Amino acid sequence: MRISVIALALLLAGCGGRPSGNLIPVGAVDVPGSSRVDLLVATTRTDSAEAGEMFTGERGQMGFADLSVSLPPDTVREIGEIQWPSAKPGNPEKEFVTLRADRVNVEEAKKRFSQRIAATHGKVLVFVHGYNTKFEEAVYRLAQISHDSGAKDLPVLFTWPSRAKLMAYTYDRESANYSRDGLENLLWFLQRHPQVKEIAILAHSMGNWVTIESLRQMAIRNKGLAPKIKSVMLAAPDVDIDVFQRQIAAIGPNHPPFILFTSQNDKALGMSKRIWGSTERLGSVNPAQEPYRSMLAKDKILAVDLTDVKSNDKLGHGTFAQSPEVVRAIGAQLANGQALSDGKAGLGDKIGLAFSGVVDTASSAATLAVSAPLAIVDPATRDNLSDRIQNLGDKVTDTVTLRDVREATR
Image (cartoon, rainbow, N blue to C red; front, side, top):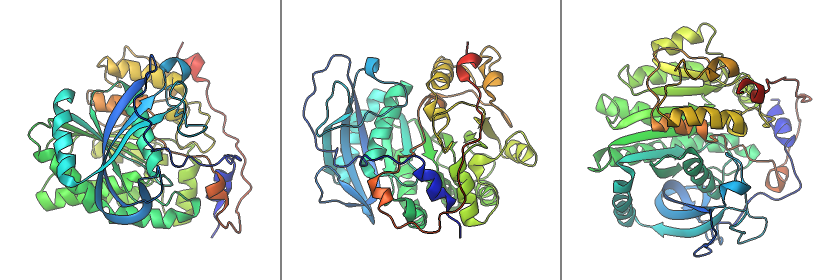
């Protein structure tokens, strides 16, 4: 089997090491302009004995954590960027640092959740990361999403066991399957909590598999989804399009708004298709073409096509995440309560947004989807390069010409 995906990932290779051990708390930070994000974690990973790691990529029972992350002043960072510490414990004036990292039992996790939910007006954001992701990478990514979007939703991370290695794709996929019940149980806890009013789910890449599967089995068990789930955002989903049709059929027609972010320039999903030897991946379809246009309309799914958006991501797996101009422009309009199809915006036509089906009014959760980087595409580093790679496939070249978004948003 040809594994050109590895060759593509190596295009991003650097000589620096992958972030590691950054969850050692540094205590209070007194930096003017810095920001703090508190987040709660539910995970099916195993505890780690390594300092600053907290959880490994191996499979375990449900565990919980409470973390706080400090972000440097906005004047020193771009929307969508994570400034990893160049040396531990990190410089809070320029880099992300960990303020608190507590493992907690289930009762303490419930207690802390109840203490915080009131301050968010009852809104919760559940983030589910993708393939090849360390625990600390998922934590810092959600902290960045929560801050950059300006959302007031209480951030909750559901993190499943990813070994965070390029060659562990199949292990990660089975770990996503392993974690379906865990995510479903978390969603039901949120549904039953008296102070929770709305739940938004944000999933990226392979995280869409565990998310959609959890929603599918929830619908089958209970003849419908938890009513408090108000929006589901699918960013670059690594899901077979035919399988997705069966999944969404099982969920049923009375589901909350599903927002799909897709790109035909997503090379990572293109290689995933070749690895599986299957049909199109959901995150790479052209929503303006048949049969996808009719399929998405029938299933009441809003599709946003970001193919023409300029990005620094060579894989095209996180296009809108890597384009600050588009993130700011769309995010600002959504934050003001405008729908994605609002004629006043004008931006959609210019950057190639395509919509299918009935367009619902964008919620604050939808704002998160386009105003924050959902793609956790980490640089290939020493960890990945140490994997034994044989029979690299096709020679990889980047021939895609992308539109200059700066011109489009003037």
